Length: 537
Image (cartoon, rainbow, N blue to C red; front, side):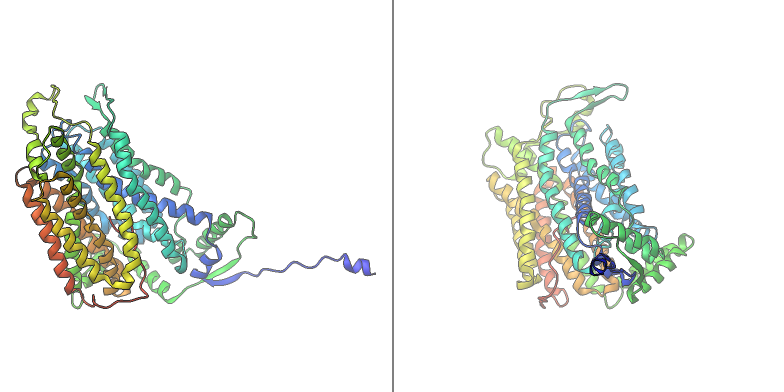
């Protein structure tokens, strides 16, 4: 009898389906393999945005004769991708909120790659400008949506960690940009493509390489489902639960029993968001659509928010004017200074080096079949070295700011960076030691540190329902500053080089003064989150 009792197996514990909140459901899925995959993909998409917008700065100096570019046209080509981002940001954000994150991200990544590859085969300035505009127009869909997509796969506790992880991947991409440019552009091969009259050189390949991350990420996301939070808010709770179960299975590698979730409870903020999106989904007609977008934006430009919106938009405009606008000609100017030094000129200002090495493109138009010895097909190594140092300074600087911002506050950081960078821009005009002037140029460009700090200020200034839109609007003004800055340098560099540095330096010092007028800027919140390092774009 004892043996028969001992042989009876104990009953297995019964796991009952659970009714949980959405955040609890994501916590039950655990943090593992899937999360690392989506973080890497998201960071690579952010790096793709960098390659699409800033990679052209390495192309312009070596494509000058192939495309017969004037300095003014260089400015247009530098800024046109940012123009594409500006014109489409609202559109993609609206579509992502109404049609889905993945439905925006994946197609725009493939379209970006297509536009970039086509631009690498163009021979006309206007055609390449068109396709660079389209590349910016499409990549904006991914950059504007990827944060929401990434965050909605994580609970509140892990959301910040996921964004910082994607930011780290982005930082690696920043550091790799000069290296990729050096390995691809500084080659000596070329070949002719019959019937289309194109001489395919390394700079064309570099453009195509800049588009590869978009293609790879687009293909990778084909296997990733739509954001579970979005599908839940759209009313498809079953699909959302299936996605969370799939995440759990991948994270636990099938070693645990299947996740049991009967339903997800709707919280107050989810119900409100669902109501707003349902209203958006039923919007009919162009006029109604524009009215809805206006209603989401107009409060920022009315009392009591108008003053705050104006200040943060002016600050972002001034930062991007220098950090991106002046950066677009950074490799070109350094290349010219190095070129002049090779002739034996060791004491000269950067602007004098620009004047001494400028090429009269109009004289080449009638001699395009001739070999022009002064046309560069390579960039001097010093341009790559200083570009790498700049990206390294950005990575280290953002890390330091993240550590000290809670302790000393935002105002001292803003004023210190603005004033140091502004003075460096002005000193460049007078320094006749090229190496020292190059280092001052590096300091000038690090004003981009302030982008993330101003974003943190924006989050503090605006209520929850306006924060995302406030950041979006301020960054749109910032990218407008990139367009203005790049075109300003393109118009003035060959004839009024000193004026470009005066404008950049004085505007940054002005931003430092304006920082004192930010409401509540003197308060320090020791509990506030650290700044994301990926705010440079």
